[in-house]
Length: 233
Image (cartoon, rainbow, N blue to C red; front, side, top):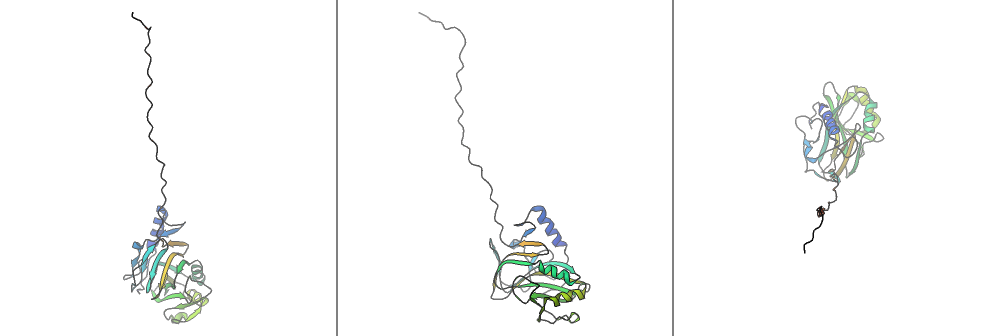
């Protein structure tokens, strides 16, 4: 997993494009065609969904959603500066994944030292599914300066306190990790007030006008010839 700093410019452009073109299944929703999902490179791709390395089985998409077979990690690259614990709490409180069948972990890669691109870790709820502030959370890496121990479940308040203490943390991305042996059907993800739709959009119904029967023109009416009648005989 690469941990380089991102930019949110791509995300802003994507949202603006969606607004202009009227994309999405609902207000402020953005459709995600399977062909638009990239792959992690030297950095996280910004403003797009992508698969983290190593990439697992191929994805599939239909009107029910995006089928993700593990092991796979699906992330959206977008840097968000989080200066307080309250800000991170608000982000998680507004996040949702619905509906998604199967076992998965919501993931939030972070630089706790945003200015130095350091103290990287990936945060996840201890309970699979939509992230909640009422469950324990886990850090993938040790962050000694903030008291976080790798793979130890701690109350969410401890994670929020780490953001408060850091003061300049950067959330680098958000998304899902599907472990090997699991399959998830993902419909939507909501983060920061924006919803992404992973189901194949249903083609709009175009009204068809009823056929018009041809009209046969009426025969012309004979015009009488003026003048007196004459008789021979």
